[in-house]
Amino acid sequence: MAKKSWIARNKRKADTVKKYAAIRAELKAKGDYEALSKLPKDASPVRVVNRCAASGRRRAFIRKFGCSRLTFREAALAGLIPGVTKSSW
Image (cartoon, rainbow, N blue to C red; front, side, top):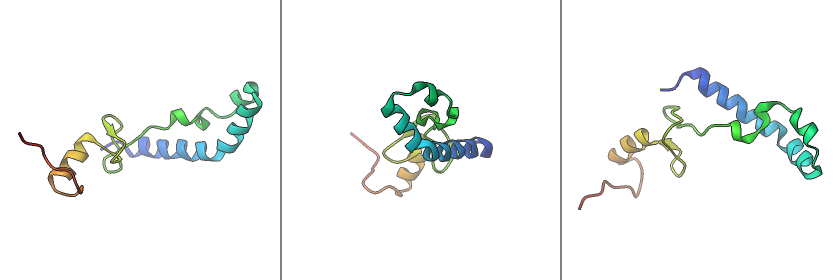
């Protein structure tokens, strides 16, 4: 489980991105990169990290399911994800 501070920090970054989205789009359209650089660093969408909904893990994140590989495997083996079965050949 990720530290709660990391999860909270990522949520704060996502809120900042949402807050400045319209301003960033307007400044980019104008080509005013000097004003764009004066915005907070966390207003940039690339600073938000994909995190597992269950564990908060950021590495090995599976976008389609919104969780890490470890959480995905546990849920798949428990039958909580429809249409996913363990392969055998």
